[in-house]
Image 1: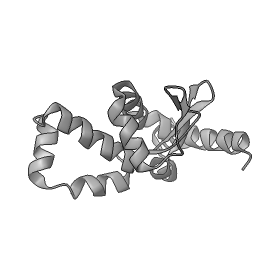
Image 2: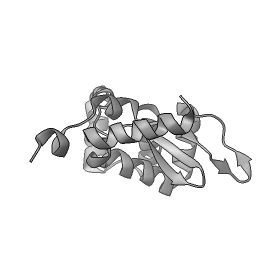
Image 3: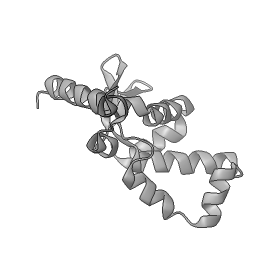
Image 4: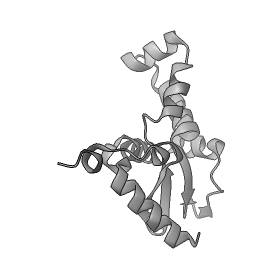
Length: 139
């Protein structure tokens, strides 16, 4: 078994994100949940708040807002092709990301699911996805 192929991570993709097609010409660029920048940001959260997060004792709305903010700043990197109530969604910014992550639970869950999928960020997969996105974006 080749360890690099089986267990190697593409550290650039983990931090910068990898595009995931969602269908209908929509897609999101997502970084790995445990990437180095996200870990540093998480460690800066005051210990009492971290304890509440880890123990699941935050009030539901407070939890939604925290997760939405964290994902928007450190995990969700970009999007394309989204429409909300018939209107084009503005270009991605962490503020816009937080708004839609908080508004749509299933969208938040999808970002979390992709960011948690270790295989999505393995060396070979991340390189293939990067090459595909370069070809499709014309870069």
